[in-house]
Image 1 (spheres, rainbow, N blue to C red):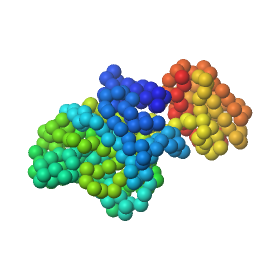
Image 2: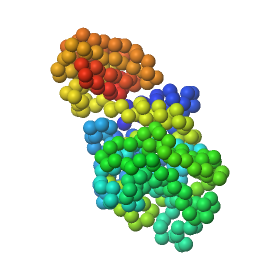
Image 3: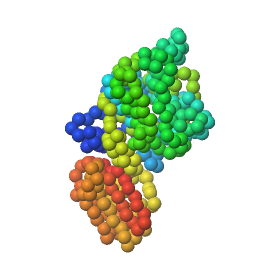
Image 4: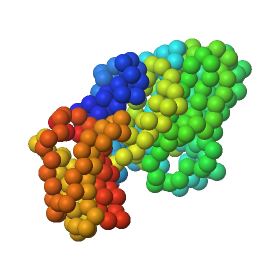
Length: 320
């Protein structure tokens, strides 16, 4: 978890300049705790587990029968402007996902005069496979829903980066760094909403629970612009360099302050390039055998690219 947190802090500092807008960050490596210690949360242990994913590294998995995450206070939404960023991988058939929630922040479903007397925001997937973010507020929409839709259906068993921004001007939905939909909010700030129950993977209604994986949930107290969201996706979409994960029989990982690159079948055109998070090439090495160790890198996060003939393997590496 420490590596993920340090990576995210460094990344946001590079993207947003001197101001780090990130309020809360949930790596979901081994627990459901906010690494920034700003927002309280608990996971139902009976239905939530932390597993190794071949692409994202360590992630949180929901079993669809008992697993969900509960936030302990309204602070998760109590800002005049905010951004949510979450990676998800839906794993059950689309037909089973009717009204199943990624997010659901609202009031209990058994309150009087439900649902026209309270505020609700939630993300779900419909039978046509489109992602939808619902905003429901009697003060803003007279009890009807304003819905932001994805442009294309969500594919099962694929990772997506979901981003939602909201301030007094507009609400916007992004997937994989690309704007999907937007709407005017009539000066309704996120802090104007009132919630009692805030969940990941569970509805305030008696709907089915989420079945799938989540990773890297972050909350920001300002709206990230298109450039920052695109940069988040570009950098975070690189697979994590975990010693146990392989790609094309090649491995890229770090240990004891050393970057290690292993090649099973060496091609005549083999090289390794190391880049900063800003995209600048720091070093390049070629003409090595099956293994090369690089111990000249300072502590930090790097993008490492191995070229071996027609094979290209890229990994995100943290050097302690």
